[in-house]
Image (cartoon, rainbow, N blue to C red):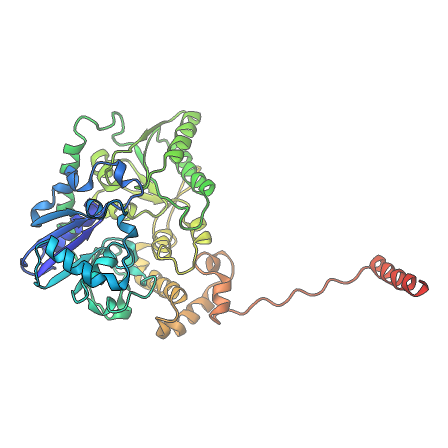
Length: 449
């Protein structure tokens, strides 16, 4: 059995490495081929991902490393969606190109919902599939039905235990049982990534950024908020950190780049009398945390913010999740579960510098977070989880009206699903005396004419 791993970067490859090291992916197969896909918008402008030292530190687990960007150029890997009739031909070509012959193949991916991972699972039409998930999306449903014949071939869901006590729901409707990848194995693989990053950044670590506060950027415009709202949220993070006494703040832009946002943050930092350090080297935010050891890290709900507490002793806070949840479209957007988990369980930073405890404490995961996510999941995908309707109705009925209900549920969605009653129609406004006189006068004029 040969194994094809589809990775979007060092953190995903570190999870693959941890799964290999702990035996979650079985004994050594025929060959292990790592297919690297740099899925950022400006991938062709950055150093090739397979050649970066932080990624190459993990290559000893694999027999071969292939750049999908180079293989598919000039097409971007996320745009690789061949027609159904082309897939058998592509499988023969790829088997010949990678020297696989007619040997069996297993496909291991981070997610099955986007190209190129979904495309590889379709092209190798009879290959068993394993999903290795290192994000909070493991606690929510698949956002859309998988292509015909793909979901039935998923054999394993490997994941990090990011929220102990919270059961994964990803792929549960396909009958896939989850398995945890040991945290210490992932931390060990991450240390190799960190060592590679130190080599990559030799002599280029920013001076004076040690123990600074860290803002982890996140592109929000694809989720519903406008560019102006995204900027406002990140500026509030900066003001909050400065208000709590952090005079030096480091900013890690999102992988797709946030040049305009970095400029706005720099201008605001100057106005506040603080120093902003922009960390625009192509290094994951988790690695920056490991290298700089910030006093605190803050973000909306980027994946890095969730993984940091499991890798490092760095406190994390969130800001802006409520506004994102209000504007997140459509309701069944895959980002809804991560945003809900972060909003419910992470401390919140105010722009006055205060830290507000999370609504749900860690010891309340089973009693409060589990039923909340179950209700949100049903509202996202009611057709796939009909057995959860009664519990969701009971949960929604028990919520008091107001912000507690509106925070995670949309009233129109609840009305559509029959879980809430539409508001009574507003009574007709009484017609005033002057209006009645005007109506009578108009009718009389008409009769006289």
